[in-house]
Image 1: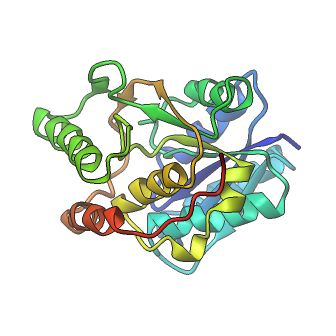
Image 2: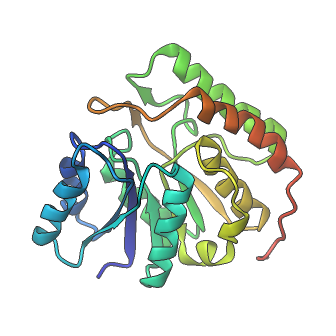
Length: 242
């Protein structure tokens, strides 16, 4: 068993799931993987179960009854990770928009450089996004600027979804107080960790838009993020570390 668990939520990732699992397991650093599967009709779960036979005690799956939201998928995975004694817990997409090789950079930031949370940042060194139309790049970048302005959180890529949490952060965050389930979930988790006094580091990555499968982004998710940030600004969060 590794000290590190990569949580990958899935819904209709038939075209990506086997490749992403094999890529993570090919890395020099040993990572385990938990798939949180939301009853994909395309057979994603069947592929995972087949691969579990080849990677026993490294690949795991939690199957839910339906598409219940990104935030609840990660919280489900966080609780599973804590119950199984992992020290470092990662969020990563299944579609290769996050390069699995960058997992080792996030791990290093937390395991050896003192970070409590490490963020794979698209904007810490310029704009490092590949294959996105300019309109979407601008929307994402402006969204992060908006989050910084409203919350005063000193993070360049506030909406990033590629992260490493140390165990002590996840043990401290009250998951029942995390309210957002979509795009805003990523902001709320960072904001909560920051307000609680945890050290957050941004690690530069290159983000590449998916080439297979269908994006899960929607106008409802974006609206939740825009309005949710205003609510976060006035959320009462207690500081727990010095």
